[in-house]
Image: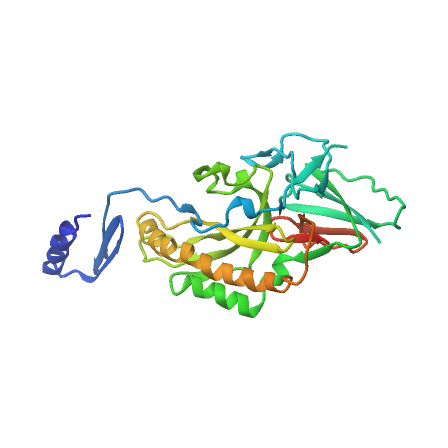
Length: 107
Length: 228
């Protein structure tokens, strides 16, 4: 991101006797603040909106073939809006078959 | 002696405040539990051989908390203890990045804590949570294994100009913290490395088997249960 404008304004603020000139920069933004007496100034430049949330996958995970049994409630249909099951009244039993694959037995 | 446990969730299945009633009964016998109104309920028949591990109490040790605080460095302050919750795969924030990674009914453990980040005068301070998602499984030999599946963070505040700097700090620290959390997990799983199991499931809250009624919160604790 081009921050030359920030640098030019910083020089201008010094000429205008502003003090406490501070610069904070991030990958997608730069912010300049300063004050002169009761006057406070903030200049902010950004090239991207940055939402206050992120999530990522671990790139180093075991292969699914290593999972013999997982913690599951097989047959559940969780609602993406919240953990509200879309079906009610179901039951099940967790068993490990001879082949080692967990199966659901409906009651 | 087996225990019949019934959970009544006030807000939704496997989330928020809930009541549990545990009723032990003799082998070959029977038990009943009645009453309770809720948004959802879960009943589990728990064999006497069940081992239930209270995740939150295991995590909130001085040594573990110190390791977690190292993840944050000077960029943020932890403002809560470590909390844990069972979540279904579609409710994990990065689900959309690879929906086929797990079955929709598979559960992960969300380990998380709250944080605070101070900001310059022209921004509001940020308060939020940092989350790691743990996937546990039994391997071909019946040993309990696990890994950090992913991470997320969310916060309020930081406006109007500081979310970029906050995100930079968190984007550097939080993913790198997976190695720390994996180390903590490996240390915990090593204690069970000599045992083999046939079944793995999660129970909301501490996994208590204490007979009678108990009130807990599924958003702040979960128990890992295994059967030989």
